[in-house]
Length: 102
Image 1: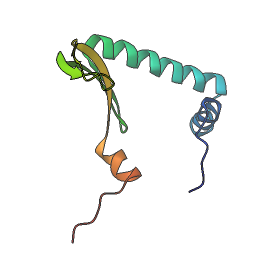
Image 2: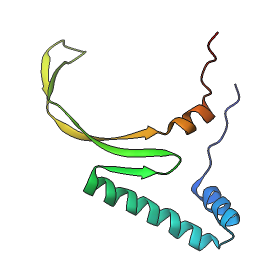
Image 3: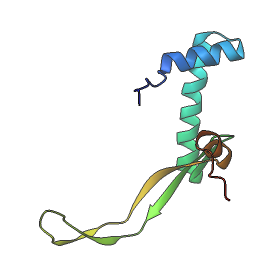
Image 4: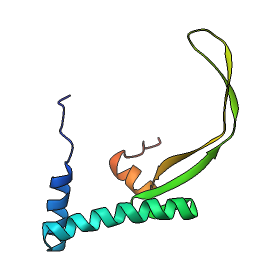
């Protein structure tokens, strides 16, 4: 399997600018603004929906016990908040088509 290079920020900005028929500066400001809005809304409401792509969700994890794999000792893992990105079903099906049942 050949290694493919990922799209860079500059390439993304250029493609958005061409598609929307705006300058690269405006396209970059759009991306920066979208990121700021996503952070602000996730902090405030706990969820931010990217229409057609998925949603960014803040989730509270409970405290739990775990084991140190090197020593085997039991340790306490404190409760904390984490971020998860849940991909929309349409995007998932487009990227990884579901298996056809017989």
